[in-house]
Length: 168
Image (cartoon, rainbow, N blue to C red):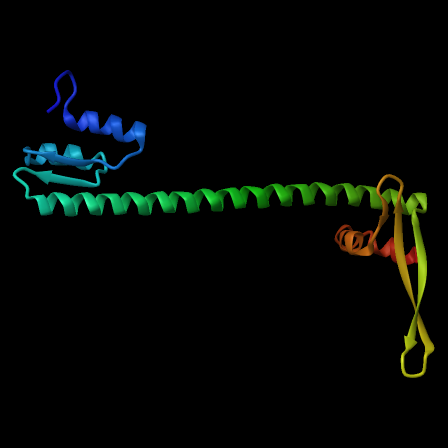
């Protein structure tokens, strides 16, 4: 029994909101107005007196299980949200890196920062060179050697692959 200026529904709403605990109403009030007010607080249960011990036990167990399930769902949601935020930051970082590489790539052509390496292709049965493969490398002034796996796709996406191909 509560005394003071607020009733049980208002008190349960405040307690449930502040402490994030499940609320099960146990009351003698069964009128529609009270039931509607209680339902609007999203309770875990509503028991009307007189109630039996088994009813009380079952309602509380169900409420606690519902609460545990909600906590687990919330934890999973938080984990997915953190993963999504980390992935977004990663993509934003990659995007920024790609923009920087694209800008530097244009300058690299003008500054002659590329070099070619020729790699022989050997027939292992005859131990003879059968062809030569030309490999382009970028010697970035601040970042050192940048491999084609990093810059070729960006060169293709930005249209710089044609001038690079002409240089090769």
